[in-house]
Image (cartoon, rainbow, N blue to C red; front, top):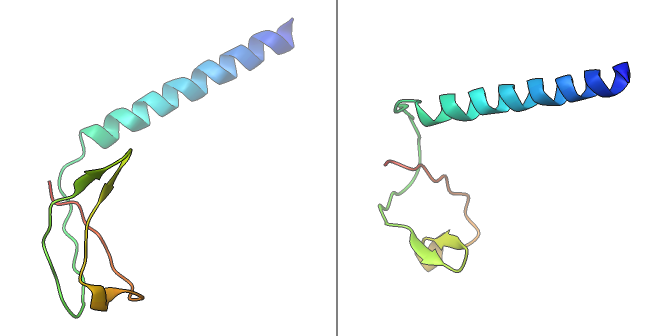
Length: 71
């Protein structure tokens, strides 16, 4: 019985911590990134099924890119 209660308490504590983490993520302000690269394009993400998609120039195929959400 004690083991079940302590397990339930641990699960509740973990849930509480996760809720606090997700709440702090929502209230986080903007962050400044400094990135060095070759080129930059600014696009709007379009809906694609259950995901989002951004089309990039074909000559970028095989290159490493970094995506930063700005809003």
